Length: 162
Figure 1 (cartoon, helix red, strand yellow):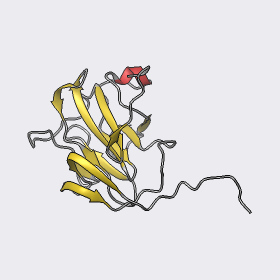
Figure 2: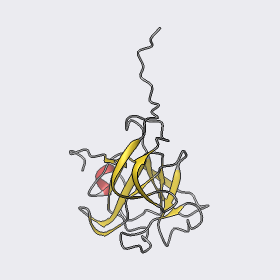
Figure 3: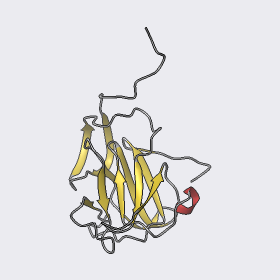
C-alpha cells in the first residue's frame, strides 16, 4: 500500500563542475558518490558558528546565498567556523556583493557533518578543516559579510533575499 510520501534518500550521486575542496582539504573533481541523504534542500545544511571551541557558541542557520549576512538575520563579521552537512558547500567573502578576499569553494563529500574553521581568532585548529583563501592563505575569521551556499554543487539562491 502506498503512503504517498516520497523518500528523501538518494544514492545516485552527482557531478561537480568548477574547483572544489573537500573536508580533508583535497581538490575534488568529477563525479561524487552520494553520501548525503537528501534529494532536496528542505533541510538547513550549513550553519555559521560564532565563538571559540569550548565556549558558549551561537549557531546561525544559513539556507541560501546572500550579498549581506544581515539580509538573512545574521550578524556580519562574527564567523569563527562553519558546520556543513553532507552534500552542502560554501564560498565565503569578506566584502559584498561577492567581492574582496574569497575562500575556496568547499563541499562536504563525507557521511557526517564537518566543521570548517577560519584562521585566528577562533581557536578551532585541530577540530575540523581549515578554510583557505583562493590564494592558499588562511581565511581569517570574523570578517565574512556575504557568502554562497551550495547543495550538490548547485548554488541555492532566493532572489528576494539575496
